[in-house]
Amino acid sequence: MMEVVKTHAVHGGTLRYLKHDSQTTGTPMTLSVFVPAGTGPFPVLYWLSGLTCTEDNFTTKAGAYQAAAAHGVIIVAPDTSPRGEGVADDEAYDLGQGAGFYVDATQSPWAPHFKMESYVTGELIEKVEAQFPANGVRGVSGHSMGGHGALTLALKYPHLFTSVSAFAPISSPTRCPWGEKAFTAYLGDDRAEWARHDAALLIEAGAAKGHYDDILVDQGDADSFLENQLKPELLLAAADKAGQKITVRMQPAYDHSYFFMASFMADHVAFHAARLKA
Amino acid sequence: MMEVVKTHAVHGGTLRYLKHDSQTTGTPMTLSVFVPAGTGPFPVLYWLSGLTCTEDNFTTKAGAYQAAAAHGVIIVAPDTSPRGEGVADDEAYDLGQGAGFYVDATQSPWAPHFKMESYVTGELIEKVEAQFPANGVRGVSGHSMGGHGALTLALKYPHLFTSVSAFAPISSPTRCPWGEKAFTAYLGDDRAEWARHDAALLIEAGAAKGHYDDILVDQGDADSFLENQLKPELLLAAADKAGQKITVRMQPAYDHSYFFMASFMADHVAFHAARLKA
Image 1 (cartoon, chains in turn green, yellow):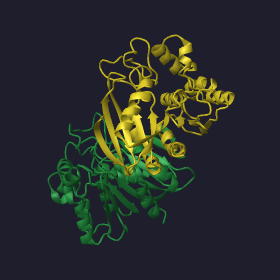
Image 2 (cartoon, chains in turn cyan, brown; image 1 turned 30 degrees about the vertical axis):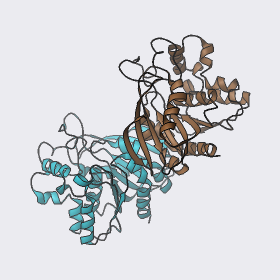
Image 3 (cartoon, rainbow over the protein chains, first blue to last red; image 1 turned 90 degrees about the vertical axis):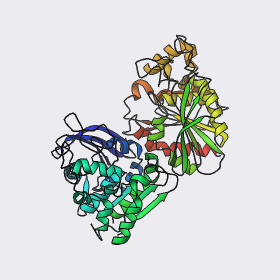
Image 4 (cartoon, chains in turn blue, green; image 1 turned 180 degrees about the vertical axis):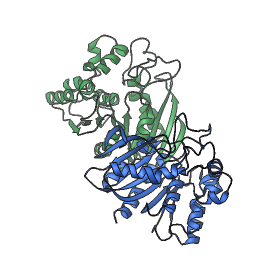
């Protein structure tokens, strides 16, 4: 059982901050879990946050729990990386602690603890769904680096997930500075290995073809990372080529912040609920 | 004009963080202002935050802007005190910077800058309503220390406000440790002066009698400050004695956090909108 660190009532349900010793990362890991009122069992939406975030940013700022309560969906928000004194780090905000990129690192000094792909798709799901009233039906969403995480994990593990969406995702990490830097550090120089963790390239290669009836992406057109890092046009081109339906909504005047996400979060929860409860 | 520090689109409207040199406090002051889509003019809801908060806590965590957008209400959230190097402070979280208590201090070392009552009821309203499309109709709400601020300013300045509500307010600062400490420091030992800033005593004395058709108060019954600091029963007793209608909703399992406020914020915005737009 994961340790409950704090509990709050919110929107008729119960929000818990949790902590556990992870066998996957070899570190303590933190997360939050919102469970709606009632006995369930409920489907679960996994939320993957962006660079610099812990589980707390989404939990306090995204305003997701009203919709989750209304639809009867559990929401799980893990931290974005292993952390602590014995864990490798970098001074930059976009590498190391707070920047796990939802891959399993193979390179030094990251390989011992940076196993976020295995953590999210394995131990996190197992531990959460053993402790809370989950029905085994799952969606995944996330923001920016976590949007990349949501898309790539959904495409690589379609047996785990029924629905996927993203806010301002890194669409193709092999073709933007954030991704090139992180993948070089975590995965080394072999670009064939990189391609296995690139949402646009995975879609283009037909990953999970036919499994997801649609993928919802919201993107602010005033997002300062849009052109250089996020590049949703690469998702659209890949989806067009592969015959994967994807709905990319360009939202006028919205930026990269939680204010943007909070504005459209209810739409995403409804998008997932429609598929998780179908 | 106040300087716009940051702008975010949110829920179809525009959120601005602002900064200005205050003649009232003699310091720079910060605030946030949400303006719904459209040309207005709109009524304005002033939000007063609690101990330790800046304008940012409400702005990022309260989830108020969806309801404000739906009802067409501007929301203004000022900082809770003057701040900076030349400003008196105390190591404790409940006195000094972040703890202005919405009174004008008369005692040393607080008197030069701690003028939050005059600031909120004068310069803040003037500056906001000169710069944004306000129609001169106002409500006031707040949390904890800011709930005390909302209630006392509404009762003392009924010509300024049309509606008032509060979350977990300090109901009677003359009868709780937070209030006794702050009022001794800011106002001195004269308890007759204290009574002028005590919501329960003001209601009991008939302040603003007949002006507010109802006062909405939400209070979590799992709030750790409930019995020792907040004491909503003193508001109820005073209202009963004076014939002032007040609706105190005890919310089962809710605590003192922004998760509690976010859960009932839409109700408060609707309560104000019904009166501000009547």
